[in-house]
Image (cartoon, rainbow, N blue to C red; front, side, top):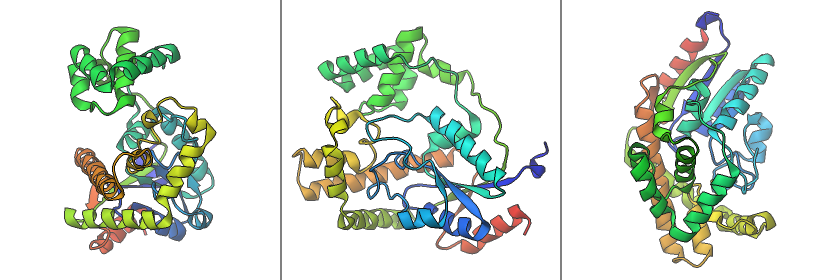
Length: 318
């Protein structure tokens, strides 16, 4: 089918606190659209305030998809996201509505639009063995081991990223082939059955984004973010996890810092500084990923709103 004959869909990508969610909600209401979240924190139940999850009122105004699909002690892979997002997009199109993809998790978007490299399936016993090894020696030691067998992967993975270290070691131990080699062999995945307007939203000045990040975090604290994390920590299923700080949900920006504060590490002022700094680092990584995509059109939603509307109208033929 010619791309011009495919139903339209819109992707609003950008760093955290760039205004993606607000614009997605506005356009969805105006265009008769439904929102598909591309956010690795919003998939977890209970991560509400700190993840800036759309409120119940907002979700009632516009249908949202791929929010609250896992409990915080569970995992959710990019491959699972891609499969679920494809189903959601197909259902939205079948209802004659416009899918609006909004978020900042680059791996999720890449998995959805380009597919993922073929990989061996997870091995529960091997993962448990790697986790036990990490509990004894520490993740930095396992990262050093990874650097010996797969220096390309180790250069891209931080010593403080247990999930990716574990997966890279798991793939190598299962197959004898570095994960970087698997990834370089190409990607798979069917073409999305939509024509996609790809927009990147970000303030023109980085200082503006930093100010928004700081203000949003203050608002989260006022809304009870620390109480939210206390409630997560009190869940029996979370208390049963041997290493909760290794869970993807707890590693979400802000949550790890809050968790450590509630464990007695540091004081409130230091926690605030660390959480805001971690959010800025997340935004920096998101910028780096977005700049590597020449298919995106960039707009500052605060100062280039007319350009955004023109891009939308031209895409929809209105």
